[in-house]
Amino acid sequence: TRSEHLFEEAKKYIPGGVNSPVRAYKSVQGTPPFISWADGAHVYDVDGNDYIDYVGSWGPMILGHRHPQVMDALRKALDNGTSFGAPTEIEIEMARLLTDAVPSIEMVRMVNSGTEATMGAIRVARGYTGRDKIIKFNGCYHGHADYLLVRAGSGATTFGTPDSKGVPADFARNTITLPYNNLEAVRETLTREKGTIAAVILEPVVGNMGVVPPRSGFLQGLRELCTQHDTILIFDEVMTGFRVAWGGAQSLYGITPDMTCLGKIIGGGLPVGAYGGRRDIMEQIAPIGPVYQAGTLSGNPLAITAGLKTLQILGRPGTYELLEEHSQYLEAEGKKIAARHTADVSFTRVGSMFCLFFFNGDITDYETAQQCDTGKFNRYFHAMLDQGVYLAPSQFEVGFMSLAHSEEDIDKTLKAMDKAFGKQ
Ligand code: PMP
Image (cartoon, rainbow, N blue to C red):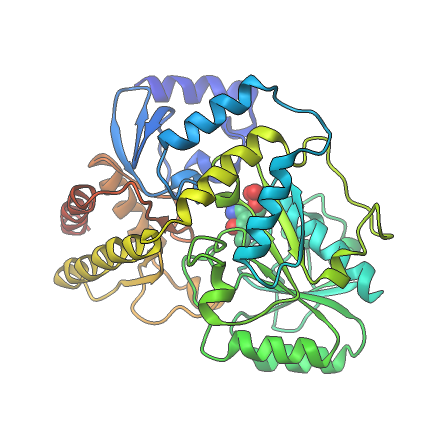
């Protein structure tokens, strides 16, 4: 196929043939389709195959691809020039919309990716508190900053060892990793490390080990512990922001973090991230405060235009209801189909984020997620791809429903599921 040919060519010049590792299909094996264009809920590859897309560029495409109003706005913005490195009016509009939609964000800084957002937020939290250490949770991904590529090898409360070569052990030393959904571990660590923890950062609904929702009381407990220890609570809502609800997981669960990281949807498919939070914390940032953070392309007019238009459309009445209705339908019917074939799967969903764990039981943290049968997932994945359903190529990634998915798309997906299970 042409994809196979291109993959071989790409591998000559680009490590693994891809510009981000999971795209290479290493864990599921085979050749990733090279995409030539996309429209609505569908992506099309260079061999002319048509796929129903549940990757959605890993989250941003909640309206579907090539939404006509987003495309129009982009064309107009393009006519004015692509980058000025100077303040523009739409940056105010974006900041207003974000502070309005996410009340815990009183001030916000735009950056170019989710990675930059978490780096910025943690630097400010450290600057504000004058402390160095942070707590993160096993299985939560917060971008590829050195000190965040740490999941901890052994035991709950050990200091981190880096997950990646090239990360100095010294950089990982200030990162303490704990099991997700384990409030006791956080309480014990904050007490033991009294006065040294700048921030606790987490995905309020985890989307980087499949979908793992917070246990009842977990987020509330973190909120109380952080307040008690003068530690900054950072919600990394790069994936969940505007995805699980307008206003993100914090509005869904009614918890107010001190800081929030955003990305994906707020860029409408262009490279954008943002971090924001309490005014007194955000006022620590240069040029008004001592914490430095900058970006040549930050607030880029094309990226802000795409993001702003996407959010304006998403903010219309009925959008989240439709996403919920379609996602719920996929879940309900998908569960029935799965149950007809096997007892060893669990369908997990929060809003329009979903995943199918090949494991019979509750997945509550990284440790339980590791028990999934990835061999079964891989066979399922390829059976779905062969039938034109484009899922993320990993048991530990999630599916995203968009507003462009029709009932017909979902019914086709369900039929494909039935066949894919039949082949297990
Ligand atoms: N945080 C979370 C929760 C994410 O899911 C991701 C990316 N999937 C990031 C941060 C990093 O974002 P980016 O890839 O835009 O750097």
